[in-house]
Length: 400
Image 1 (cartoon, rainbow, N blue to C red):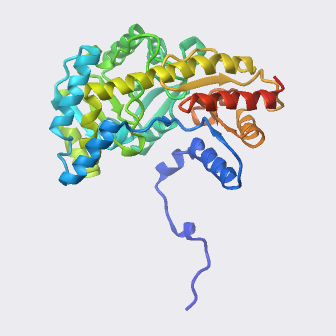
Image 2: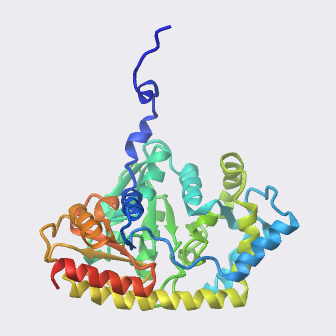
Image 3: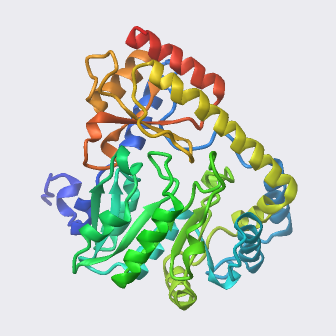
């Protein structure tokens, strides 16, 4: 028999939506760094947004107990009732908000939450407005549901966030809603509460939806955080146990949705995911114990200390930090004035920093299309001593 010798991919017909999803350069650069480490190089990682803290002991103990008790079967598609009640209590204690536990949908991470929200709300060719820069997967969730992400250039003057005026100016008959993040990845900036209220009002006027990613909300440094849920029951919010609660690989998050949307989310959850990890859910109950929350608060303060070190350090190296981040663990820095031949070319600059200084940062091309070559994203979710060493290495590279 004569078999064709064509590449395997030639026989595969991919869905058109795949073409709208670019590679995740953060992860590609991480793979390159890992290859250098395997070759014996010492690399300081400030690329991936993952806390260096892991789940605290009470959470680990709760997971161990759940394993021993054998409570690892499927849960309700909306999540454990006890966990939904604990999350509701957290909103009450932290934000003074009375959120009905029935509105809370426990998900397999914030990624699953966003995918469920987009599946429920975005139809073919619907436009969804979001800022440029923004977390790349947000636009890909929209594209994966056959919608059209519309990225609006949002620079330092807008704190790298959308404004109500921009939403109004860019709303078209095809626009269905907005997808925001506060605090934001990659910039670490939050939307001012008054501005967020204006955005929600504009969206309501047009009969659209507002989704707000609040996964970094617990990591706020300069003011008490305000949840978009305070603006009305029609706002959809996304949250996660990954960042503030330091449970990245546990893949656990949640949505808060309007009451009328709960049945739809349950149907979608049943069919697309069955449920979030039962073990992770039982472990997460320990996150809300007073002793555990005290641990998280001390870690939040440590992230704030790192921010207060790295922002002036970057400026001393020649980077511009046009907006000081008020949350998350990122700095979005302008590269155009550093003393390096690749200044203003973030892709080339980050490769030089990796290969010549052993420091991983991320170029702006992951996060949008408006001047991505000017910016790099730094994650300070690594040990303070590592940040100090990275600054020394980059100082040598730049001759500072």
